[in-house]
Length: 228
Image 1 (cartoon, rainbow, N blue to C red):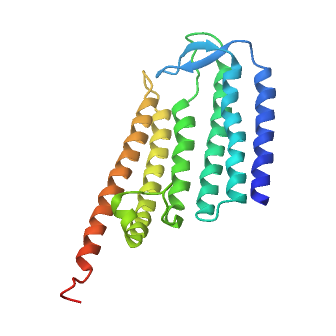
Image 2 (image 1 turned 90 degrees about the horizontal axis):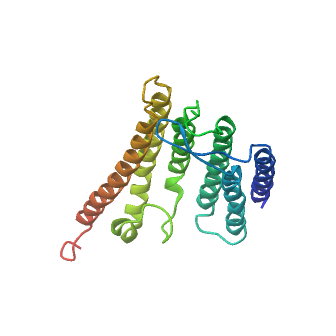
């Protein structure tokens, strides 16, 4: 209850602060940037209110978890709070970009891939760290036929998945920083996006294959009726 209250207060304060900041921007600002970091679309700055608004709306989920959820309550809470922090961060990142560019073709002059991909990468690290705490369920986690069939396979796969997710998140964060800081023309920020998506796909494949291997080993280890 206490943590849900704290999150709600901070989310509302963030929403109010964002609304005040947006009201001070010009009537039309850059609302989209191409791969080179140049503004290619103008629009109302109020488009950016979506990010803090989502952060505030996630408070509903946080309260639902606090009041009703029992199984996997801790992970659900971490998940919602992490998403809330990510959207709040993105809201201020794009607010900064909008404040810097209000004309087509104007450069954001910000390593936008790093400030966008980096928060998501760190979010992957946080969620991965808590992965082994997820108990078997039908909503979240590494849900494959093998993990859903055996609680032991579920536990082993989620322990292995923790290391895979944390490693992927850290590598993605490093790539976002490196490629955003390289002074090249054109900029290579987009490479960090490719790395991020590629690492997530690699983690998904690894977890599925690992679960299948563990399941087969567990099956081979079980005594047959004749042996029993």
